[in-house]
Image (cartoon, rainbow, N blue to C red):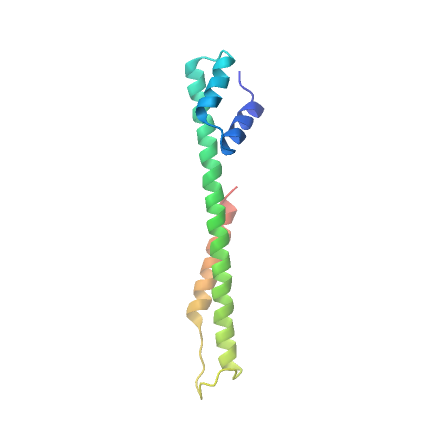
Length: 118
């Protein structure tokens, strides 16, 4: 009765801010039964929610990767800087394994999370 293209257009209209009541009125004007309208609106709501959750997950995975790269780079700079004598700390050497491991962990987490997001 309702094509997938029309359902997708309803989803896009809802994402752009159109209210459910105006979509419902449009469906009523097409002489669609109330039960079918409720089913269509549930499908639209489910798809809108899925799209919004995917956007949020994608943003979180990108954020995790950025923070991970920053930590990794800072840890490597600190480690190699102390090894090459760029920091005057006497006969000691700093091995910043904490930020390096945390950075690698966040990078892996970000990429694994982004591969699950469609």
